[in-house]
Amino acid sequence: AQSVAQPEDQVNVAEGNPLTVKCTYSVSGNPYLFWYVQYPNRGLQFLLKYITGDNLVKGSYGFEAEFNKSQTSFHLKKPSALVSDSALYFCAVSANTNAGKSTFGDGTTLTVKP
Amino acid sequence: NAGVTQTPKFQVLKTGQSMTLQCAQDMNHNSMYWYRQDPGMGLRLIYYSASEGTTDKGEVPNGYNVSRLNKREFSLRLESAAPSQTSVYFCASSEPYSYNEQFFGPGTRLTVL
Image (tube, rainbow over all chains, first blue to last red; front, side, top):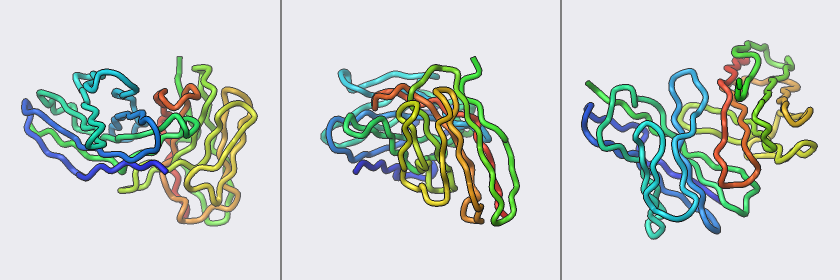
């Protein structure tokens, strides 16, 4: 079985400050890890993913994420937050043994205040 | 390209009524998915289709049926709606391998009274 935990329901940061949204996972085999963003009344949009290789992956809108195998984590980061980054963020995991099915975390609401 | 489209956008049903949610994608993806999103529970997989002609149950399939009509279209049917099925439903598509990201439709907000 595979699972994802996003330990924080809500993250609040001030504009211009760095942000981190946490994610830990559990999976059998090699993990494929994803971050998606959801704006109000919209579907999820893909931000970035880790498949293999460099532990630091870069994605859309200046976001990046660091894969840490020993801590089974894949935290989303951005050096300088924007008010427009305020949204709901989902971490997801899949494995090469699971026929393309991803398991999603419960989501973290990011609020960036001016 | 429209990506993934879903109809309707909103629907209100009475308990016991039936309805079909439609989903289509124009990205030539092999795999398609149906999720429901409830507050504080993330996305839960209802059914998925790895390729045309195949469907399989996800985490929460009870009360739902699906049809993979062709490569483009994947519909979700509620035969006898219940208030517990009040949710936002998302369709998604992807290439079939686990390392591929999914592309989501805009969602259908369903209320069952």
